[in-house]
Length: 297
Image (cartoon, rainbow, N blue to C red):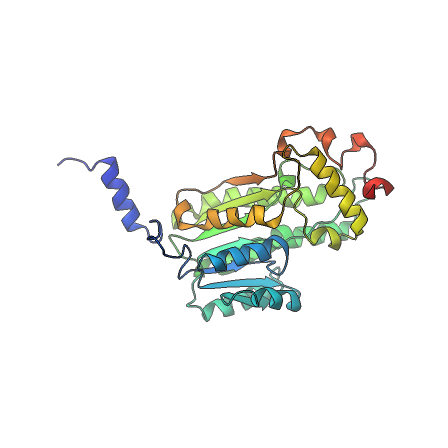
């Protein structure tokens, strides 16, 4: 018997894998699919939730600790559902499961976006900050993935981490944040290997210098943040810093059924910042202590 050609095998594999064929012309990319986005009330999480909703997702469940912000995002699109929950806890994970039960007990896309940033200088680390970042940026995604895995489409499910360039190119004064984002990088690769036999893909985006509320939450003044981002823009090869709209489409692209042969990848979205020398960074110790009064200059 003549073995099938590579073309025939490809067609057979595509037919056998739900959700891997490109959508017909005019069909919504995420039609009939359920998405969970943690930290969906602000910043990249909000932009990602809206991106999935606009691309036709049946339900986009967003989580966070601030009910008001979640409600504001949910009001922007009928497909977005707000679930106020701390997803670093068992109760928070259970709240997401309960919401998914009202949407067919099926999860197609999980976006681990919730995260916090705190400065922890080597000479004066704040261990409470360190533990808070580990809990939110690393242990929370581990717990939520484990609890939602039984509901995830298999094959065809997708997990996307929102990591950071700090995971492989850390800045001074933020060692523990870098540790947590290196952890997110590692979780991406480990989960991609471990879940491949279920047909579940795991990827990450690693943005840099995207202005969101994370900087305000770290206690910086508007003047300090403005000065910091002027420095980032001046050092960036493309001459600007990022916006959430630079990142959200790539999250959706990784999760798309059209990316069915992509897993274990970490996409850097930084305007070429990785190409620059360490001394170019506004944070660089070679430029003096940028945490001082010159931040707003």
